Length: 325
Ligand SMILES: C[C@H](CCC(=O)NCC(=O)O)[C@H]1CC[C@H]2[C@@H]3[C@H](O)C[C@@H]4C[C@H](O)CC[C@]4(C)[C@H]3CC[C@]12C
Image (cartoon, rainbow, N blue to C red; front, side, top):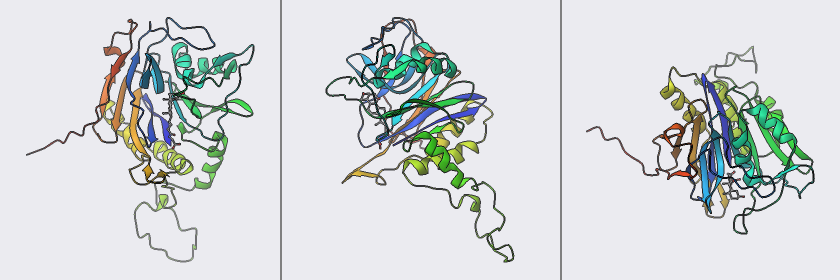
């Protein structure tokens, strides 16, 4: 499963945890402005906004899992197995395949408002990338520098775009259900709650942190959603980039999956393969991997954005210990 967030702290930081039992061989990929995006059923884009993000490159095509463009619009695809439904070609609509959606939106929209406009005419059409790479059931979080985000879900009832007041997305159920469920946890707090259980009895607060005693901690998507909303909405604002990036990764790592805890098929466990975050103002892309807790960074504006070829940055997966003596 996965978790995606937008952390607002002066600058805005957007990204996700990717939780899976296999690695696709993804890397950090910068798509410069003049790389030609060929789409299956809508016109090609020869010139567009530059994009940085995590992608698998196949036949020189960047299959983005998540990313952001130079205008500070970010987008991530998360598993949505069950409710996700893609449609046949529809006349009069922009027929975009789910694997094309991130470049289609990030290539031409500056912000969430522009993405919303484009989505009005969109039909998510069921065309596979190839026989080997079939479509995966996804939904998307889209966020920008205004500090706001939306969720895009294509189900049997059509394409839905929801405002996301909490700036968190995980997986099932459908987004309105995730929001409704939050009410069950609205009493959770960072402070020690008053004794409302039996006010006439003197209960000893035996521990710190009793306000979050009922906070879910499971690997499942509903638990991660609640835990992340609580963590993100009480996260401090840093005084500078280093503090913000540190806070951001603490937020994501609060819901990371450790090896051995989530068995998806007998003997196979999913875990947080990587966590990433982009400063939407500067275009700096930060990431950690399961094996490497060090925060690595790739800077969008330190690559030549006017060329045509993709720029690839293989993930640094080796743990580097900082010996002090
Ligand atoms: C499976 C993960 C989502 C993580 C998740 O939720 N895990 C599984 C779970 O536990 O449910 C999704 C996120 C982005 C997806 C990839 C991207 O959409 C790009 C690409 C699109 C192709 O149609 C299929 C392969 C490929 C490469 C996708 C494979 C599945 C990915 C990697």
